[in-house]
Length: 195
Image 1 (cartoon, rainbow, N blue to C red):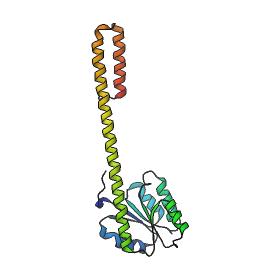
Image 2: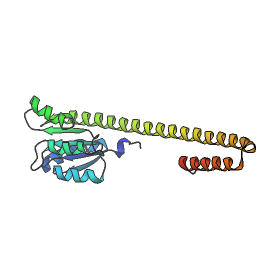
Image 3: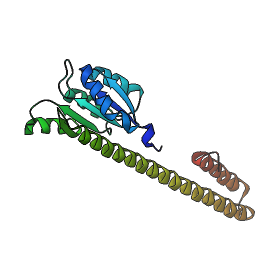
Image 4: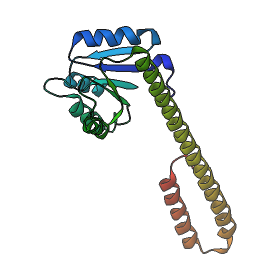
């Protein structure tokens, strides 16, 4: 599944409407779909049904803060690989950064942030996400090709065995031949109906 730049969605999560509006204004010209959530719970609910390529997540929110929201996102197999950029007004102390990275953040931006820096980081992480998805698709394609190669080899092996059994039919007693044919039928059923 290839993701083009136009297909990518960015989830903006902040409990303050003015912050969501500012993020939207800064990122709107990049051409990506912007989805807004006003709480961690609302973001998690959205992620149950839809895919996003990047999450911009406020650290300080009531009820469920950004760290807890990120931990929930990281705990789900479907969403654990989505890059998260934390947006924070908290003093940028080492323990805050450590806590954020431990919760799954790929980056931190302190408020008020530089709009150009935000745009640049968003584009970098979206490109990395696209490249990762393209690589995963290529690996899956190669695995399917490998499985197809195995299937072809198994089909060839069954055909060779059938030919050998047909040659041996004349020299075997009738009961032995029937047992071999039953075994061959069982083998074909195990491998699959296409053989």
